[in-house]
Image 1: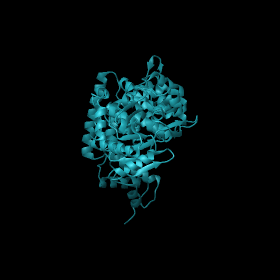
Image 2 (image 1 turned 90 degrees about the vertical axis):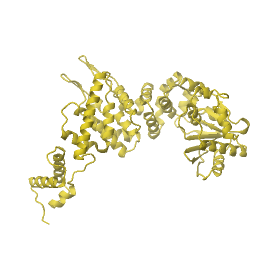
Image 3 (image 1 turned 120 degrees about the horizontal axis):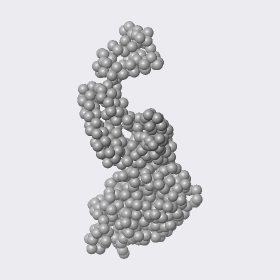
Length: 496
């Protein structure tokens, strides 16, 4: 029996290990077994003790997909990585990071990082550690959480031995996030671990250990030394978890959200005046994010759910007859998107533009359900939403969070009518992703003029006439209207 076969039978046999009886483990693939066996054989040949460690072991136990494999060895991780690469076919390139004593290679679907066991210490104002060689216990001790501090021996003398120095299996079984060491030390050393604690709780739907949670509350100000990029990376993973509200609510309760995302916290609370109140828009937003997450894994569509009402605090007013209003919050919210994305170092590209568009338009389909649906209104929505119409409809349906089941059903039924009308008008008028047949270049060439406000005015008039159904969506009708609007501006077409 090969070493990888031994590993599989030892670790995942109900007869030899209680893990199998507690959890639905995910079997090793042939590629994994080959890779593990190669690492074990090379380490044995070098006389080096090597271990599978960390999140890879955790995810195998939980039966979660895992492609990131961490190998810790007592010795040079770089040397082991380079030797392992030479035994694989085709030979993968090895990326070496000498300053950190680590090496990385990509083999088939797996990313494997090799590192020598080490001890780490941190300065007060930095998360960059001072590193020195250490034992396996030193290496596991420095890890963030007990459920990430597992190791499996790949050494011939105790091959397949499962090492759990901090009762991580007990915490897995109890669904608890806890630090191996005193949490104040763990989080002070590396404040990003506070975000990671919340992220794992959200991804796995685990609870934060009470002492660990209290320590995050105490240490939250230290998150300020972490770069915006690293914080956003963790926040994105929270948003991609099955139920993002778990993580967002934890971030709020421990005080981290006030520091990293104050605009979202500003939605918190319900104000009452003359006995009239409004809903808590923070928890409404969390429900919208959960709703949309059941229907899409698109991170940026989920971001649109987070930000759809972000303009409400700035637009909140109390009117005697209408009560609380948030007029124009979609316009204000759209303008806030770019500021938030810049501060958080999120991409300032088509992803941001998608979020801006969905925030700006998120009330439009809802308004259509409250009035007679005209072809003109449908054409405008098709034109402005374009290829993102389906995402917009997902957002609008997710925005229905009423506890009144009859009200929810009424809204959903109205949305079905809107969807039907959208399909009907689109099939007839082909407006989605449509560009008006008259461009600025045609206008300038026809009238012999250069770029000007007049060109934009004529172009807008033609577009609006088509969207309002006043002329057909075809070139000749649009051209004749262009000539008419040009003459109104004192322009005549040039000859030839």
